[in-house]
Amino acid sequence: MQKKVVAVVMGGYSSEFEISIQSGQVVLDSLSKTVYDVYAIHITKEKWYYKSEMDETFEINKANFSFSNGSKTIQPDIVFNAIHGTPGEDGLLQAYFELIGMPHTSCNYYQAALTFNKRDCLSVLKSYGVHCANAYYLNKGDEIKPDDIIKKVGLPCFVKPSRSGSSFGISKVKTIEELPAAIEMAYKEDPEILIESCLVGTEISVGVIQYKGEVVVLPATEIVSENEFFDYEAKYLGKSQEITPARIPEEERERVKAEAKRIYELLNMKGLSRSEYIIQDGVPHFIEMNTNPGLSSESIIPKQALAAGITLEELFGNLVEQALDKKKVS
Image 1 (cartoon, one colour):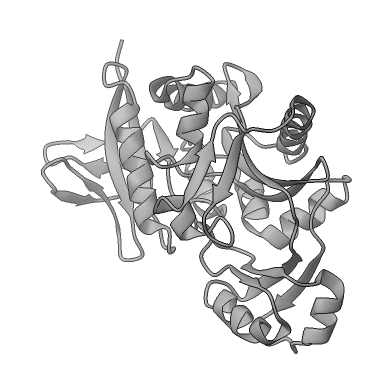
Image 2: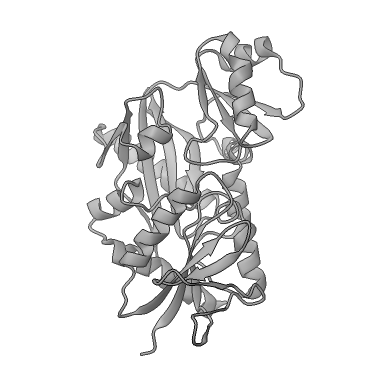
């Protein structure tokens, strides 16, 4: 049987570039080499290119996403999308791949754009009765009214860019005097921001996948950060405990599992996602969803998959095969 050609795209245009490179490398190392021919594709603002194991680079033909390997032209059968942030998680690449007829492992372009914009995603889910924090929205240039903001969300509160990942640009604000600087920092990541009330409870991360034709909720992870919240240091520099399965009562476990599956299906998701919750007074409150979550050795999804008895080879191979099967159906 002829091997399928998988192009693993990584990098991107955002602050999450290096994290994406790590994720992409895990995918490259984990996909079965007896089933697939796997190529590392780097996406940068300057150029898109295939990077060989000898560190040679060959530019991508954006008309059909083909490239040279130095001796012949390679035409991928499918793209494995390992880019966090723009353009791989906000719908831009998904729309491009759809236009050129290239199967890919991530969700569709609309779902990617919606979930990447925290404000829009929260607005949609609240209409379905999903519990969320109180929020105040600002666009760059809007008048800042600290008293009105605090009246709505209280103190402490979180100031967040609407579109960013890995906790870049997020601040926990404890006093009204800290608010302007936190808003300015969030604007460095995105001209749209949100300010949310501080939920008090257990932080839980839940992976949801389509696995062997079914929606499967992976074992939940409990986040215990040494810092004020689950920030960049906590996520990637060891300043947190990530405990899988989460140490929560069975009733709460089932509640957050059901909510994660409901939200996945409400948003018509496909492939892999990871959503974050604070369980406050026994009720899961939705924080955000990542449609291209981290896949590095320090990331949560690989640990949850292993806890569910799914190897990374099986997890990533399943994503590839589902996307190829979807192309056959369409």
